[in-house]
Image (cartoon, rainbow, N blue to C red; front, top):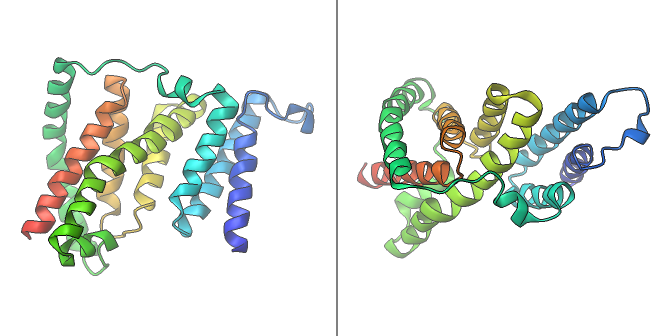
Amino acid sequence: MVGLTLSVLLTIFGAFFLLIKPPSRLVPKIVSKQKERNIGLWISLIGISAILQVNNFFLLLLIMTIYLLGKYKSIEGFVLMEEKKLSVACLQALILSFIKFWPVVFIFSLFSFLFFSEYSNQEVVQVLKDSSFDKQWVIILSALVAAPIVEEFFFRKFLYRVLKFNFGILLAALVSSTVFALIHFTVSSFFVLLVLGLFLCYTYEKYGILAAPILSHSLFNLLMIISILSG
């Protein structure tokens, strides 16, 4: 409980540096505003990493909401910011990109199988295998709809964008994808999820619409579900 409280305080304190009015008065003439923001980001990431250890994703969403209300004054303003419309041509290009990406998933899956097969699978994978048909549908709907929307909103729309603004595309993609892989708590699939996170950042950057990584994420989960149930 103490660890969780400290994690939340660290994250909120770090996020406080990122609001519209950074606390420059707290550190006058000691660091620049840019360094101030960088300090806040790293403190926030430490807090987020600690929260991941207790597996409480809802706390991350709460902190994100607090940040958005302070930064943009409304969630709606943030959601609609710089979003394009998903056209048929964009959807076709997205599917083609995913097809080209799939061999990379296969390579990293093979790597994980060869070197990390002794580690247990993600808990939800085992539940999906062992559950009745009724329970399986709940998991499947969550994996195809709820999880892609919630996770992409947090990891790409929020975390990736904040990191990109401060550190650039490459570091933002690497850090957000690493956190994305860690939150799934599975050593055996860590590298697969890491490259998936990088691909989702790529699709978001290329197509400029959150629907792109959401659809890609959903398609990835669909193929994984088919693989699990047929295995």
